[in-house]
Amino acid sequence: MRESQRLRLATLVRLRWLSVAGQTTACVAVAWVLGWTFPVVPCLALIGLSVGLNLFLASRYPGSYRISSTAALTVLTFDIMQPAGLLMLTGGIQNPFIVFLIVPAVIASATQPPLTVATITGFAVAATTVLATAYMPLPWSQPEGLMLPSGYIGGLWFAVVATLVFAAIYIYRVAAEARALADALAATELVLEREQHLSALDGLAAAAAHELGTPLSTIALVAKEMRRSVPKGCDVPDDVTLLVEQSERCRLILRRLTSLSSTSETHLANLSLLALIDEVAEPHRNFGVDLDVEVIESMGPEPVARRNAAVISGVGNIVENAVDFAQSRVTIRVGWTQMSVWLEVLDDGPGFPPAMLDRIGDPYMSRRETRDHRSAGGLGLGLFIAMTLLQRSGATVKIENRSQSGAVATITWPRAVYSASVPASRDIQ
Picture 1 (cartoon, rainbow, N blue to C red):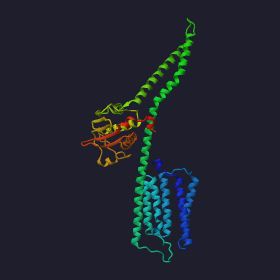
Picture 2: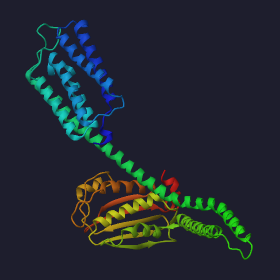
Picture 3: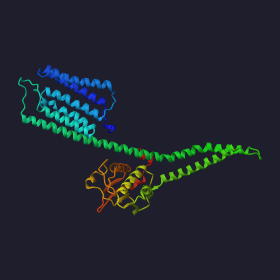
Picture 4: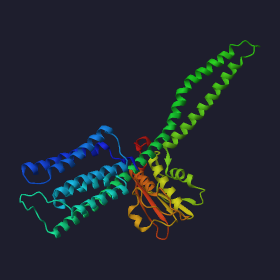
């Protein structure tokens, strides 16, 4: 059970206090303001049960305590049975307050797993059915009470039950989609955070080399002076010799770090389109699938942009999916004009089922089969992350089936947008 599906106990306690206030007000108004006859004492006793439960829960658990699905099932079942008892004493399904039996089912649908939702909804439907057949007379101004036709009571029962079922299904679906979207966005943020950390390593290396260079030069100079101060013919102490050798070794290490950082910074500042494609394609070669890169159109110089972690992750995810589902070949077609930059990722796999085409890009959509006819996990979330990252970079992403077999993903940027990519540190915020 997800943490987002664990209800805060304080929320249920506050809602029950609100229910207690409303029930008490209704009983007092009907009994002593309107003067209508009904079992006041039993009704107040049932209200007292809610008060007692609230006091017990508030005294035993902290307000931030989150209850499990089993505990939520127990508490929400009480929230159905208690008002059902009040309704049975005051007219059953004829009482307008019958609609409040929907509230626990709505709460369960918005927060609980499917089994708990089905159980709570079933309890509410059962309680409504009992109240349609077994109840005491509705409090009324006339001594003989209010007698509704049986057909009308049947219609009330159907309306309440239909509303219960529809509301439970509808709210559960909406809440489940919201939770899936929230989880997918959280996963996207984790991917971006990881890329940010990787991008920061070069800067850290450069900073370390710069900061350590000065004190290390001083140490090396002092060590050499110590060695020169030893008179000729005397043995140089081993410690002084070791100090000089190790300082030279440290200087070589820092020189390599500086060289690596400078090369990396140049690469960051001048990442061409084909270099980007090679970088995302290289990890997916030699997996039993031929991966080719073709330049289809090239008008003008090759596009060059700042290294963008979001673009690399997005394109890499689409290439990875293509390799997973291809039978034998994945082709990356690249092209650019004065107005646009585009690439296509084509595979020769089974393609997408027609029912999935309209949902491509939704998180946690149904799974496709790989080339060995096994179900591949993570497709929906992977495509969601890829499309989200690429769209944030200014790209348009279109994924569809090919005319014969396989799928094709087309990614297009306006040339000005691609070439004016901002640094990775801003892209990933």
